[in-house]
Image (tube, rainbow, N blue to C red; front, side, top):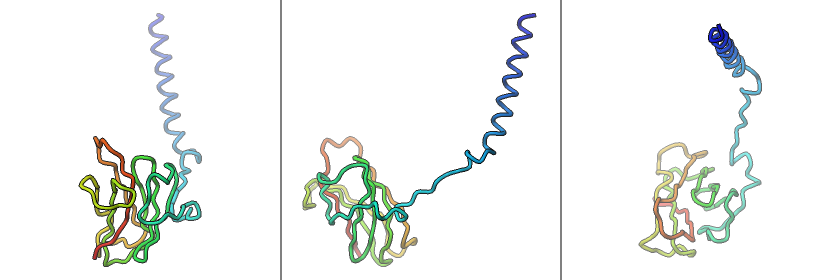
Length: 149
């Protein structure tokens, strides 16, 4: 007799969980998602010169680089960079250059890649991310954003 009672209890528990899983997503609290935009919070972005001295910026903050051909904001988490290009000229490609040296002079250990291509939309509100290459035995001390036509 005892096993039938535990089976009934487990059926009751399963039906309760099913009802709860159907009801919970329809509650107003589960539908609320706050959109966060770097452009919306532009007053929180700290202006920095280009090239950026990575030894002088703090992880966990947003920074803004202003150039005659583009304006971008980026978030540095101590390892990777996530950002948004607020405005750019459509005929210029934008590159990110992680430099071994603070002054961003050329080195064979530098890391460069394109974050926005010329004549390819969107020309504003373009998100980008720069993941630090894996298995590096050194740290980058500089960061530079530049354009090429």
